[in-house]
Length: 109
View 1 (cartoon, rainbow, N blue to C red):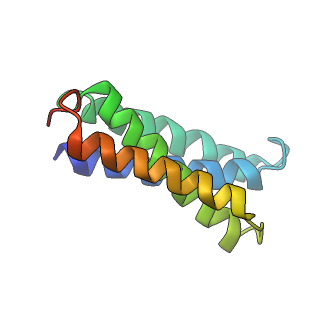
View 2 (view 1 turned 60 degrees about the horizontal axis):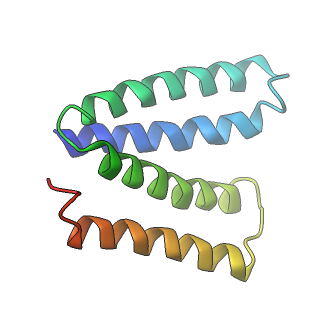
């Protein structure tokens, strides 16, 4: 269940980020409302995951996958382009999360 909660937190964070962009600086009430609700529920599920997953591990996964998926939404939905340094940076983030989860004794599961 802990990784289900973390997955839901990540998906809702990505949804919230997409609607934050769509809110146009919080000037549109519907996207702003969806953003706020998605983030509140995201933090709720993150808090449930933190009951059993160490903070550093959970946050690394949450933030790392959030960056990757939010970047994908940005490219697909908002037609933004990622340049090579952005892609390399994202790959470094993913690599760091994988290394932390596979090899670190700090990230005990």
